[in-house]
Every structure is written in C-alpha cells, then in structure tokens.
Length: 160
Ligand code: FES
Image (cartoon, rainbow, N blue to C red):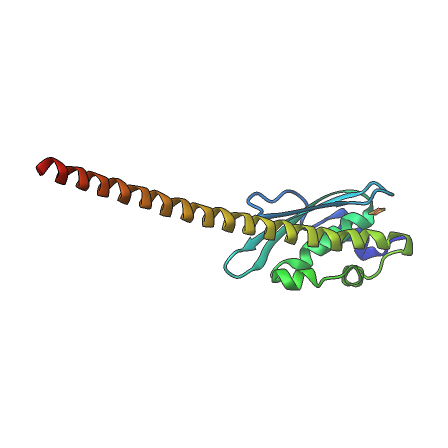
C-alpha cells in the first residue's frame, strides 16, 4: 500500500514531539477517520521565518509521514512561503500516497495554515496589548500634571 519512503519516514520521523518555546500551534482533525495533527512552529519574529517545526499526530501511517514531511518543508521558509505549500507538494515529497490516503496530506496542509494563523493571532494580540499599555502611560502623565497645577494654584492663594 505505501512506498518505501513513506514507511521509512513513518518508522523514523525526524520531527516528532513537542517544541518548547513554540510561538505557533496548529491543531486539525478529520472527523471521518478520527486522526488528529498538531504542528508546532518557532518563528523568528524579525525575519518572519520558521526556523523550527515539530509535530504530534494521532493517526495513520500516511498522517504521520505527511505531518513529518510538512514540518521538514516549512523549516527555513517565510510564513507566506509556508502557506503556499499544498497537499500535492507533500504527496510529491513523499513519492506518492495511495488514493484513499490523499486526505492525510490535506490535513498536513491545513495544520501548517492553522499554525501560521495561530502565530499571527498571537503577534496581533501582543501588538494590541502594547498599544493599550502606551495609552495608559499617557493618561497617567496627564493626571500628574493636573495635580501639580492644582498645588501651585493653592500655594499662590495662601501667599496672598
Ligand atoms: Fe485520516 Fe490518515 S486516515 S488522516
């Protein structure tokens, strides 16, 4: 059913496991077969490049080989380049998949997209928090200035 390359990757995946410090995590699943894939990515925020990727997959031989290959393919890529990787690219890199297992490669493509989306969501959230924090500092400064003005005014009145 599977070619030698798929079986070799399934037996010795290069990217299996969790990735401490990952700043993007994508989890997808297929309700029909019940397989679940999780891809973890570490993105260099300055470069916008994925410099490490790992996976945890609960699924078939093809699901594990597809996720491992997807991780291999996105390393060193920009987020935009990673999003352009299709399930067909994953199948080609594996040297082919049985027709009934094509959906496993689709799941891998979706897991990449979910991990990138999660990273972007976290970056946006951090930017919003930083913007709110700046506006809070400005408000505090304004309040202090008002207090000083009030004190000066009352000192003048006492001296009159
Ligand atoms: Fe569903 Fe492989 S059988 S992902």
